[in-house]
Image (cartoon, rainbow, N blue to C red; front, side):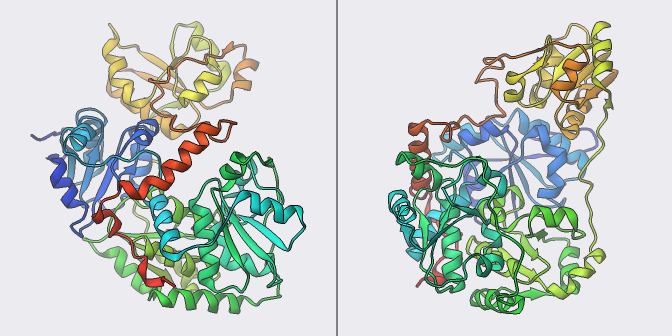
Length: 540
């Protein structure tokens, strides 16, 4: 059976067992799960990339830049979001599109494994890495005792600053894992200080601690067992809203020394260093995908963007590779402006099974020569209006929909608004006796609203307005804002992952369930999935 959109290439179907073979045949493949975040988190294929239909055209060209790559779309049964996504991708020029026949239901019926949660390949890798490397760990109570005794110990939190601020271990300093190779000498100048790496759970604690060990620092290094959740489960107090973080580089250890140390580690994995000419050659290859990722901090990427490079902070690129790279078997080129961070991050991507290289730091200034082939903001057809205009149009009887997340809708929306998510646009328009001439969308993100608007216009709506202002502005404009804690219902909130969602909100059972899930990921994997990783190379 083929699914054809007007003017688009034919779309094939692939059965579950055949797809399983494709995933391990050594050729590039983009396995895109186009259900919403909550549906994906409840269960998905091991190598699936989360790309919800509600954001499809916004993110697909970043995640899957080469239009001729094999693309396989997955939804619940192969007839919903996957079918819609196939039509949209065909219009964007993708040439080799398949839908998993029967969707996730057929995958399960074939006796194949389904994984809950997010960033599963990276998290399972962390568990395997801890086992292979025998990464030292310390319990929450042991660390608490060291802190109480004023021992020479420093706690470094390997998560991004925003996550660190939500909850942190007392005295912990934020230093995301991707920054460790560059910053550790300034954070820890005394070789007698014990270093403890932590995160919210397990993976980034393990990766952070093992990064320091791999670099060869002389300090004793531990991963905090089970992170902030383990701390909480042992009835120890967490801090909130802290601002401690690494500072500027000092001259105590020269940048050259840091570069040499990082390069020595990368050489153990034979990580290639390429020049701009090689990068351009790779990017011009018609049958191979090359991603260029800027592993510096978000602040650096924003203040001094590197042309053609996707901002992908190093620690998060390891932790959540599937949010930055959507093509399995692709090549990844890492870039920084110091020659320290990219080589170290590259070692982990290599162990994760990727073909990875580092751009020669002296060629960073030539990145303007790199061709960027995609528009991150495809045509989005809605007219932006202010809250005062919304109030006037409501008075004229124009229909009002809220296209923010389901949880935002629950917390507060304009009285009379209906919640709408893009996968449900077809069902909505089919319910109308007459398609309305005008519609208003209350939105948090213009791109997401624009995609809903495009679908409504295709369904016959004549004009779509979009309001991006905050609830405070709605109230100032005279509109009533109401809360509906149970609307949309849990079942309708397909964009929200309820999977152990309250593990940081005082629910110890949820925290235990999350940690158990993380530890047990390896047991769910088959031998082909385990064989993707390259962990034996650095075994001590």
